[in-house]
Every structure is written in structure tokens, then in C-alpha cells.
Length: 307
Image 1 (tube, rainbow, N blue to C red):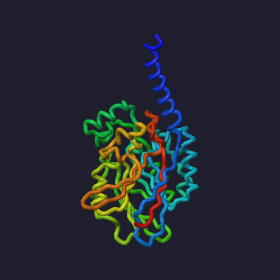
Image 2: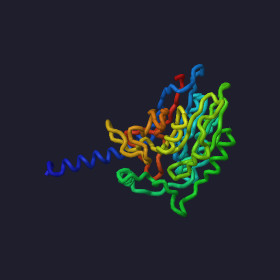
Image 3: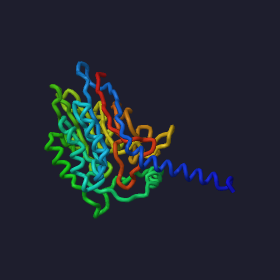
Image 4: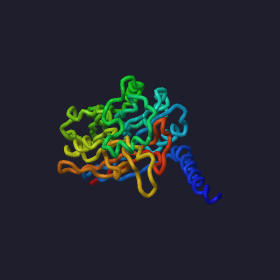
């Protein structure tokens, strides 16, 4: 009798322990990733860039708020927010509280689909089946009619009031220690709000350095940035795969990017050019899938140095 039931019970117990760890421990085990990227022109001093992404704030997430506040102690040269700040329409004040200390520094931002629309309950298995079918999350379509509207306008107004530069299908720049850092940003391609034709033309003439910024790293956007000669592209969206297999990695990216580049620093080649790509695994999850496994929540401090 013991032999008959021992193995199934052991598997069930292991699965339960894994779920408890993913939902109760790892999802709150916030990490700082540090990356050095050799992209700056000769003669420029190193620049420290803090990238935050996919906060997916839900009311009451105090540990996440305090951790984000603590990142101000890094004293970055500037901050890039790559979107999906919300997972709760009531979460705007808590996002502002969490990012308040960071908004003392220069910054720029793009939005993701969850900034515009509230999340819906979804079968997590669909992410894998859609990947196998060549589909990706929302499959490039806007949310259904009647989707919950998130107060993204309040987010925008708060970021703008702090002096952060909005990059919704537009260009912007920051003055950092006498250098002009130019940005070209896209709205979220995951719901087909990107309009590269409105910002085409390559890195800004006269700027000391240029960066492409987008929430979801769809290949059409990466190709466009790279073909036009941007040395660095920053993105988020993937959650690093969120539920990964130890010693193997991610199963999905929720876009058409390959799983080998689901998070961290890599390169992208298109049109005879090569760019560095950094994809943040983000520090949150949808309120309907509050678990992470073998993929801790993170922010990244990128140190940009001479080529």
C-alpha cells in the first residue's frame, strides 16, 4: 500500500511545495541585476542607468514599494521605466509612492498594455500553446471591447510633473552632466500601438548618445531600431519567462522574441547593424498570476562604458 501511494503523494507534496515557494517566497525576492554595456563613444564618462519595468502594482504590496524606494540609494544618472506599472486601477498612488524617490533623478518612460487596460483572468497554459502556434499573448490585437480602463493619464501626469520624458511614439532627450542623451520611444507593440514611422530617421543628430526604448521586444521594433543604428535598446514585458525550469530557462516570452534572450543583455542584428538589447525580467506579475519560479523579480543597473 505504501509503495502504491507513496510516489503520487510525493509528487503532489513536491508540487505543492513548489507552488508555495513560487507564490510566497520567490515572487517577493527582489534582486538588483548589474550589467556593463560597452556602447558609449570614446571620451564619454560611464553612465549609470537604472531600468525598472513591469511593476504591475496591486494595492497593498508594501514590500515591493519599499524595495523600489530603496533603489534611489544607487543614485543613477537617470532612470528608464519600460512600462506595465499597473495591475490594479487603484494602484496609481502606490506606484507614485514607490517611484517617488527615483523621480528625484532624470528619467524617461514608455507604457505597456497593462498601463492602459486592467488584466483579465487567463489560463496560464495558453501562453505555451500560443507560443507553439506562433501566437503571442494578445496576438497583437487590442483588448476586447469593454476591457477595464486603467487610469494611465494619472500615471502620465505624475511622471511628467516629475520631469520624466514621455516616449510614446516620440523622441526626447535628457541633459546628463553636460551630455545630451537622446531617446526614441515606441508605444506598446503588444497591442499594436507602436508607430515607428512617426519616429524613423535614426539616432538624433548632435546627441552624444541615443537609446531606443519600447515595452515589448517584438522583432519588428528591434529590427527597426537596429537597422537605423541605435547602439542600445531597452525593453521589458517578458517577465523573464516568469515560470522557468531550473538549468533550462524560460518556456515563453509572450512575444516573438526567442527564449534565449528573454531577459538580460544580448545583441540583435538587422540590416547589417548590431545593437545591444537589454530585456528586464521586471519586478511584478499580473494580479491573476502572482507567482515566479526560477526567475526572481528584478531591476537592473546598467553601467554604460566606452566601446
